[in-house]
Each structure stands twice: as structure tokens, then as C-alpha cells.
Amino acid sequence: MTTTTQTAQYVASATASGREGRAVTSDGRLDVTLAAPRELGGSGEGTNPEQLFAAGYAACFASALGLVARKRRVEDFDVAVTADVSLSGSSSTGFGLGVVLHVELPEGIDAQLGRELVDTAHQVCPYSNATRGNIPVEIVVD
Image 1 (tube, rainbow, N blue to C red):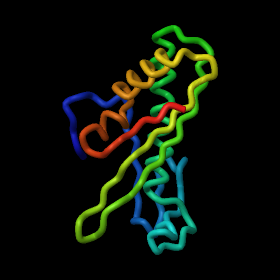
Image 2: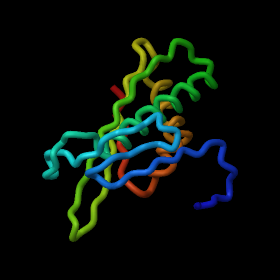
Image 3: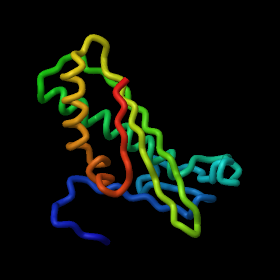
Image 4: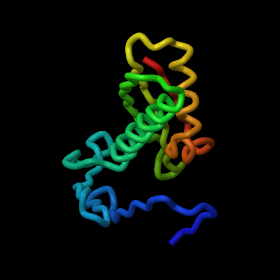
């Protein structure tokens, strides 16, 4: 078990058998068949790690935006975040990820306030903090 200097508020645990197999969380709430996408020569008959990462990052960033908006007392702040996670590289050069976050802000929100909220959420979001300096992350505000 890896330890950190901070005390964890929550620990999620999942076990996977590889890109062609299964992933299951310790509580059994997530139990998915894994398969490499057709674009990588797989069957595409299951989900893949990039999709799981995209779903987690999108959900986390949307939650961080909501938190930041509440702290700024912004009301009726319904957002949608889409994370596009790309896989590039090769087995000889190594693989890498890239992320583009598409943030749909509520209609009528001031553009400057919206950008401030997005920038602050990017500092708060655990996924953003984990990826910062490790993989390219672009944020597009729609």
C-alpha cells in the first residue's frame, strides 16, 4: 500500500486484469468488461481505461466547478464537462495521454466570471492536480 503525507478522506480500490479482461471495484458497484478499442486492434466489445479516465475526470472537474461556484455564491450553475482522452505513442517509444476538457457553462453567465471559475476549478480538481506537469490538458470553454 502506498502512503502519502496527507491523510486520505476516501480510498477507492479496483482490480483489473488488463485491457482484455475485467475491472471490478472492491465494493462491486463497478464491474466492467475491458477491451481494447477497434482503433488499437481490439474487439471494442468493452470499455477501456481511457474511457474510464475520461468519465472520472469529467465528473471530478464538473464537481470542482460546482464547488467553486458555490463558494463564489453563483446560483443556478448547471455545467456539463466532456473529457476527450487521447492515447498516443507506441510500444517502442512509450505511450502517453492527453486531455481536452470541454466545459459548457450555463447560458447567461458572464464570460470573465466563467473563465475565473474554470481556472479556479482547474486548481482545485484532484484529477487536474494529478495530471499537472505530467500530461497535456487543454480546457475549452463552450
